[in-house]
Amino acid sequence: MRNTERHFVTGSNSLWHIYKTVPFWKVAKNFIVIQMARYTPFLPMKNWLYKTFLRMKVGEHSSFALMVMPDVMFPEKITVGRNSVIGYNTTILAHEYLINEYRLGEVIIGDEVLIGANTTILPGVTIGDGAIVSAATLVNKDVPAGAFVGGNPMKIIYTAEQMAERQLKT
Image (cartoon, rainbow, N blue to C red):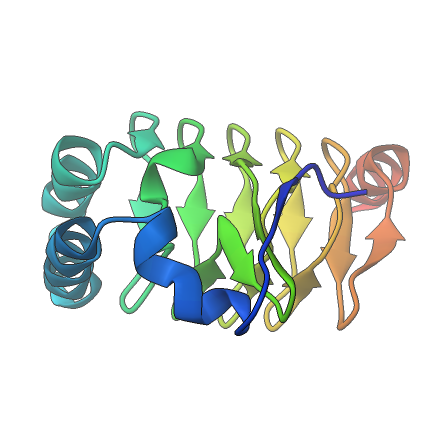
């Protein structure tokens, strides 16, 4: 289950309340920083931009591939452990705006995690150390440490124990 805070709204849908929930200038600044980072090929520069201007927690030697899209409104709710790889065009969301409510949730990506290309990670999700997320996966719940997951919606393909057993066979 995802761990999110629910905030109810009345009247128009929650996205119409956006600048009551997050300042316009914060979103504008975050957008500019994220667009610069999405296109830069320099991994240390991306990590510096994310940590310095977006207040994301990014571990040493973690890599964000080209076109990764961290949450533009609440990037400070994203933590990426050390030596992890976030694949091409992955989206990491820490918010979701619905009709009658919006939700906020921390996204925690552990150490030595591999996230495949074109993956979407929803708010309130924890991805355990050493996990592998297949390309084009919708991560809609927590991923156990060491597991191999994939699909839309996400399913566990191999547990950490099954992955260890497979590695012994090769």
